[in-house]
Length: 200
Ligand SMILES: CSCCC(=O)C(=O)O
Ligand SMILES: [Fe+2]
Image (cartoon, rainbow, N blue to C red; front, side):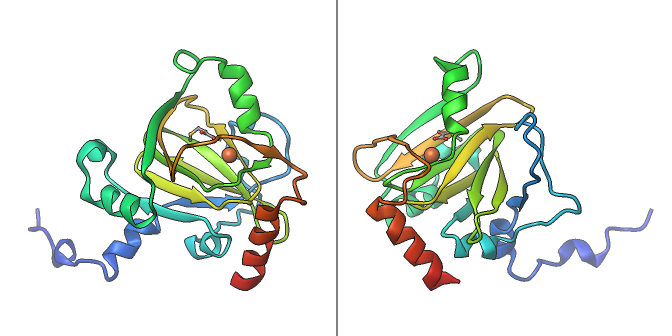
């Protein structure tokens, strides 16, 4: 066998950016069957991290095996003032009122604050609306930290693994209140729409 080639020695340019770019997102199809299926539009229409950023959705890839002592996570928490956290497990065995909670996670809504989740185990799908009100689906997996902006309509579903364990981060005392669509009269909604115009 040949010795390992030089390719192995090459550090890809922007290696750190590549770590950020690993999130998988795509336009959703319009089928209303089981949301746990991938629901990729055909032909597929992937969505880039840059497109997500213009919607105010931010993403980091971290090492969840060291979440209890991770300088990278601490840096983000400090910079963004995420001073509160807990850990939620969404599974039939561990989440009280599982069916009911899943149903409300997947009802289109917004919050007055950012929604910040860091996936420690398992996976699931967040869906956010683009600037033309079309659904974008974001696969979140172990190591993905994602923030959805205050005032943005979104929803969440488990995937076919039926399991996710995630850290919930918050600034100040959390309120998980969901404002179901339509919530156009809320000031935070107006602010978010203004942000979309600015960032287009
Ligand atoms: C990925 S955490 C589970 C979902 C959730 O907390 C939410 O939708 O608010
Ligand atoms: Fe939410």
